[in-house]
Length: 278
Image 1: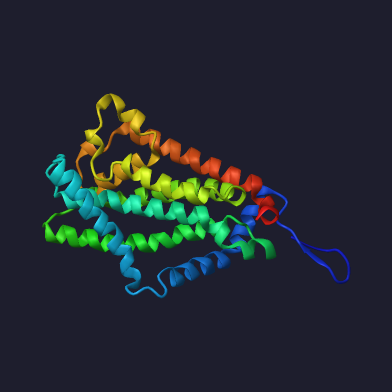
Image 2: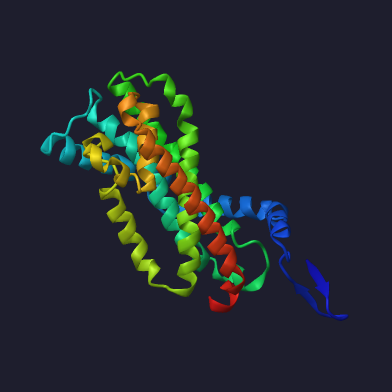
């Protein structure tokens, strides 16, 4: 709300209640779309191949993982071409890792906005995650190409793919909001996040399937919320009930909801201090 202090001064303040804050998010929706569109325009500006980077990164990673796990380790592909098996997992992982990294650094890269005007700060990390949906859709073209190359027909479950994309989005938002808030105060996270993303790929079922994990450890393995998301993507794209471990999937979904709730709570808790700290 805006409060007139005297004839010449205007103090701009956020809504005083949670209800007003969420109303402010709707009122500032045009800023949300502006920031998202700006990030789309500048992401690959002055690069030689532009949006092709959205395709090259997951494609090259898929080739490396296929060689390591499919040719060298000779892990089973469950009757599916190994490149499709890997790329079906690369799509959600690439979306999460990029969204998480971008959201974590979003407040630092928009310092000027934080110190000059009021708007719900949650708009900044949310807009960076939305931008990566565009990259996801571009990368999905490669999967279609792989299916055509191997004459692979996806099962009917592919209609549920948007639901698991939403889960990947919520995971990115929950983790991104929490780390973005911490990153304002502790700049160490600028160096921690890349390590977490790199390490996370190795402990997630990207180059292999969760079926390679011993049954007694499957529930423990599902404490990584991206396990359920990646398994869900594989189930939608490849089919086969073996890709869905129901207790682990329910655990992953519960953890994602908890992570998002905690991320929003912590972000809102220290949001009012951003301008002072940064």
